[in-house]
Length: 451
Image (cartoon, rainbow, N blue to C red; front, side, top):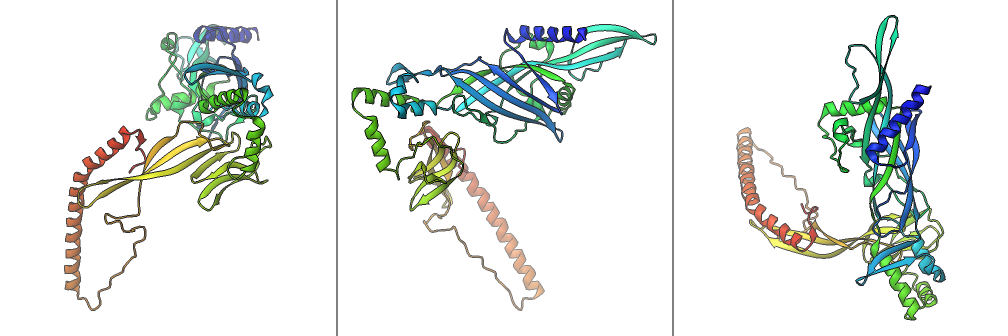
């Protein structure tokens, strides 16, 4: 027992040397799962709003694949600093207390994107090996060597351990409001070579803070990583936030509204009255939780309506592709225009330009909108609709065998000529299409969806 306590202290002391003087949380295995909570104030926040965070993690193996699940809770400093019209401005929750509408918006600020790195030490227990034999560590490191004798045979005891570092994929983190737990939607699964990074001991002592993920095609590495994880009894971990991205337009707008209220340009009571009279255009910002909602259409306008009738996203001429009831944000798309470029062989390239943005309950963008080019179908070079082409079946009554074979030869020859012509036209059109895409890209338009 004394040996194990000393060993645990040794491992933690070692990890302090590798990861800096920071608190480590021991995550033990229970019923095949590593379950625990990491508390940290190691936050890199450009606006200073996030004070600390709690990360609840679960790691386990299911059907020989790694599975991970996270709950994330962050806590606010009660203040943030952003640039507004060329000046650094600081806003506090206490300052907004006299304007309830702005105080509520302050409380609803949610991170847009978070990058969290987990690092620490894996404790994989001990390995006893007969003296003179090389231990098969399965890719793990060895420490705390001791020896003993049994039945006249000398044994060496090795402590197995490994350093780990891992950046949680963005899709597995779902942040919510300050002090509110943001739960993952579903557990995620990574490739074994990308789930945890186990740097070699000799390289790790002088390791850089960033790392490259393993090669998925490296089967030897895959088996080593599976073995390391399965042998681990507990992890001693710390977590830090590498980056946090905030809805800066919303945060700036809160300050601008505050200035307008203070200068008498706008009055909170009037703003509230206006919102009530234009209920079809503005969302109800009630704090009542949303349990059920529907993306609804009213003539040419689309919005989001709660089960109790509240308008969560205003009705506008756009397409709503996604709504998150936790944050109150929606992803919307607007068709702007169609760009064309004439190619060879009567080919016409058409691109529908779509503006994609994320909006809040007021319908305003919380992120700068971006433009995407999408392949536009439905019209031929003469402008005719080709979305529906009738299928015509041709029969050949009283056709002899020789006539049938001759017809099939002609059809095969026609298909061959058609394929050759298509290949020739494609070769001519390829540089035209590439030039078309580059022209759109030069205008800041994403062409990744332009086929």
